[in-house]
Figure 1 (cartoon, rainbow, N blue to C red):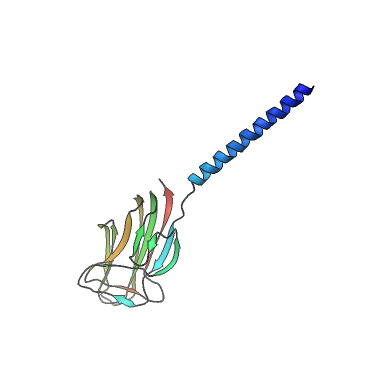
Figure 2: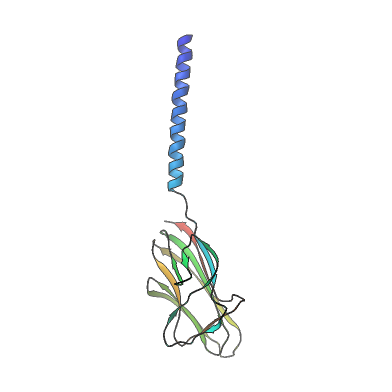
Length: 169
């Protein structure tokens, strides 16, 4: 009877040690696979109409409302992917002049989308577009105002740029 009690205590002690070891491994694995959080929402300016210019201009969306993960830099206008993954990006362009309104989307200095519309009627005009892109860590996305075109924004925050990480790869 004494031997069974000691064996029982010894088995319990081994099981508790194994459970503690398993718990430690699960905690370590969980911290290694912690999912990054990336989301931003910005508006362009309070200045009114920007453009036309003699050269293309990188748009710097200076009014940052959300920047979880700090992947958007308002000083440069660049969104830099912090991890490899699939990202959802969206922009809205507002125009309020008799000029063409336009924006181009760049990934690492290569234009991947061009959008524009003529505003001959001098009315408020909007367009919105979105992208789902596979990006690697360090890839940069930014918007460019093409030379000779315009974009408009005020305290109403009509011209915006936003994005979020959908999932990592």
